[in-house]
Amino acid sequence: MAKRSALKAEFTTDKSFIPLDEKDIAILKLLQNNARITVKEIADAVHLTTTPVHERIKRLEESGIILKYATVLNPEKLGKRLMVICYVSLRQHDKQAGLKFIESVNQLNEVMECYSISGEFDFMLKVMAADMAGYYDFHVNKLSQVENIGHVQSIFVMGVIKQTHEVI
Image (cartoon, rainbow, N blue to C red; front, side, top):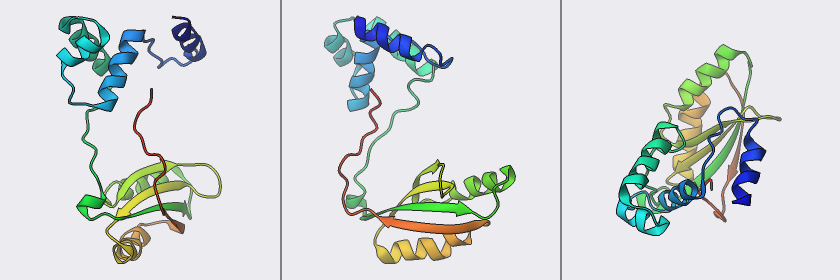
C-alpha cells in the first residue's frame, strides 16, 4: 500500500494521471503479458470474481489507460530482417512543414514508429525492411521523396537487446 501512495503522490501534478490500486495494476500486468487472457483467468490471478474484473477492465479502457489490444508479430518470420533507425531533419521548421512530414510518414508502411525528438534531428523513425536492397529502395524512392527532408542519418540495428511494450 505504501508503494501506491508514493506513486500517487509522485504523479498527482499530472492532470491526466488516473490513480490505480494494486488490483488494477495486477490486471494491467496480466493483460500486457497476454492480451488474450480471459476475464476468468485474470479473476483467479487477482483473487476477485469475474464481474468486478470485467468492470475494472471496462473502466481502464474507457479512461484511456488501455489504448488497444495487439498481437506482436515476429518480423523475421515475415521476411523483415533489417531494422534501421533513421534520424531525419527538416529544412523548414514551421508547423505546416512538420504536419506535412508527419502526414507523409504515416503513409509509409516500412515506418514502424516515428518520434518527434529534440537535438540535431527533428524525428526518429524505426524502419523495417526485408534486406539492404529493400531499405535502399525505401530510402531513395520513398523517404527521400518526402517534401522538406533536409538530412537523413541511417543507423543499422545489429541486434535487439530489449524490446517491450510493457509500461508497468
